[in-house]
Image (tube, rainbow, N blue to C red):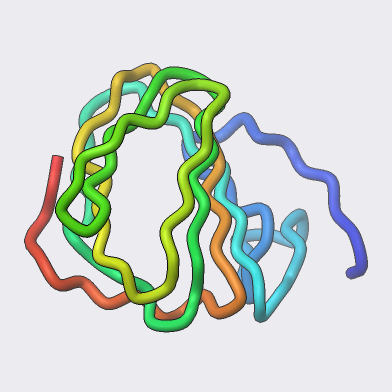
Length: 119
């Protein structure tokens, strides 16, 4: 499939991935795009890094706090934060309701968890 159009209604919607959850997603071995919505507390993987991929957090509603290489940053609606490959980071707080996109590439199965659960 060379293009796709999908609904972003769910709490987590995989837009692009090598294995989208349905035929609605765009298959890509080099790009992953996730639409997320947070309405209540949840657990994150904790501090992690991506060996070969860069990651972009785009906040559309609410705000998130990230720990990026030991520094805490707040990303509010209308803002984006980038995290380069190999940089330890974690989602540490969410001012919900929050909604946004996480974009990762060129590799997507390269996550290494190096710290315990956060949030």
